[in-house]
Image 1: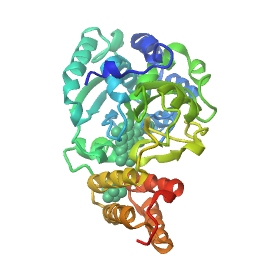
Image 2 (image 1 turned 90 degrees about the horizontal axis):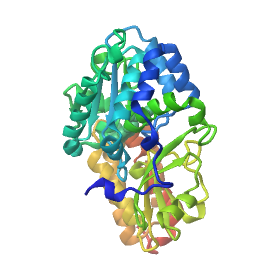
Image 3 (image 1 turned 90 degrees about the vertical axis):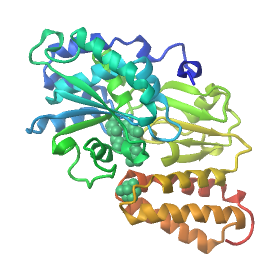
Length: 398
Ligand SMILES: Cc1cc2nc3c(=O)[nH]c(=O)nc-3n(C[C@H](O)[C@H](O)[C@H](O)COP(=O)(O)O)c2cc1C
Ligand code: SF4
């Protein structure tokens, strides 16, 4: 499907449409690393891939590392169910992403960048290579960017492995090194020991795209949008039972109710915020805010209409996690299979109090004892659906 036919904009344009990658890059060329880090820190930019880690702080940690070479990795794996905003950014605003990566390189002292592209986006590669080549020819990428011999940075595109876990930054790095995509232990973090054991900054596509915009328009422009804890605006991928699915941009802090009105889903039954690993929000909570301090999300919003069977939704998500678990640790490898089987049984037979207690304990164990974010977040949808929709299960005992 041509993504341009499914844009849904609030207002007429995304902020990215009015931004100039080159204006931001030209300013960055004149600034030293400390000034760049100070600007991005002042904007309050937080990662758009899910966890919301402050970008300025990540740069500061990477800058402080003394080992070379350092790497800048753009996480374009976009594997979270219901997320497709990075595909739009890479299609229409790749210059912003590549400029953002180069600026990150200048800030932390890295000259090499890698864009890790989701395997299913192979068709985008030729377009991205063209943009890279155009930027090299224009002196915006490669050796001596804008004629500055102290500013060199180039980007290579590497293809993803077709696995959800490879979006997790340490599994992504393993995959880049030619190994199985499996999460690493933390510590150390990638900024200390990442690609090839060297200091590495990993950020989401959208996070990089905001960087030149912040330099061009100023950190105050950015932080004047959103909330105190979640400054700025972000893109949301909206899908499911709504009249106008698409990509929407809002400042952080917008209510779910407002978004549902704009996408034509006022009568929704529930919304899955944050994809399969996020939480299911029932209609009674639609005044909650989309922000890191309330409903955090990597940008995926899936709307469920009144006719949806919510435990069928939970079963589907749990099946996804059972399939996508990398299998390294028991709570995730076994827990997701058991939870998936149990949801199938409860849809047939209902749920008694004892079984509910056992399943909640299993879910808590998975959240606390799994090694990485995949297992830790995998029971979230089930638990939130159980909290809000247990009344939809058939009466009886499991
Ligand atoms: C299972 C799993 C899948 C993930 N998939 C993605 C992804 O597709 N894209 C992404 O940017 N971050 C993804 N993340 C988050 C990354 O690990 C990492 O936090 C992020 O790339 C950092 O960039 P940011 O600070 O700009 O958000 C995933 C995390 C987990 C646990
Ligand atoms: S939590 Fe799941 S995906 Fe993560 S390391 Fe353990 S088995 Fe692998």
